[in-house]
Structure formats: C-alpha cells, structure tokens
Length: 85
Image (tube, rainbow, N blue to C red; front, side, top):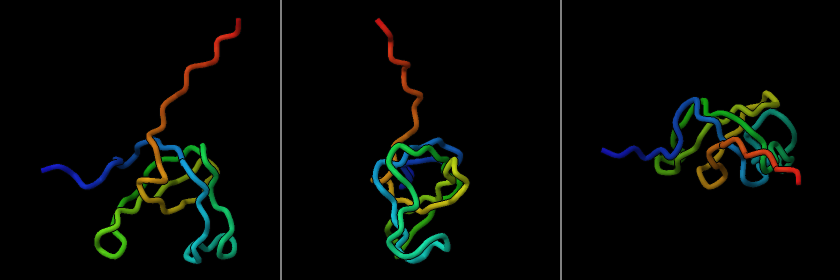
C-alpha cells in the first residue's frame, strides 16, 4: 500500500513559499512571517488536519518549528556550485 505522505521523517526539505502565523503558533502575532522561501528544515513529524489534510512539522535551521502542507515544501537537494569562467 502506498503512503499518503510525500515526505519522510528526518528528510531535509526547503520551504517554497512564505509561511505566516495563522494564529496557532506561539511565536509572533497572527499574520506574522514565520518562514521564507528557500529556508532549509527537516521533517520531524507528520499528521492530519481535519482528518484529510496532510500536515508536516518542519524544524527550521533557525530552531523554530512550523506546520506546512506538501505544496509548501520541496525536497532539499544540495545545489551545484556555480562555475566561474
């Protein structure tokens, strides 16, 4: 049986869009920015919201943990260094 999860626990990921506080995060006011695109983190948990929306707990390099949907994440891959000519 295939998993409903796109990301595994301990998998490095990158944030793909601005993550704002929806009022459930203790850090900052509702609407404040918690994470920016390109920030790196790691999946530390995964579960469901309203029984059918997959949500991932992401520990960012900054130390805070945010909740993200799969469309807000991409697998982290080291980028090739730019060659200087």
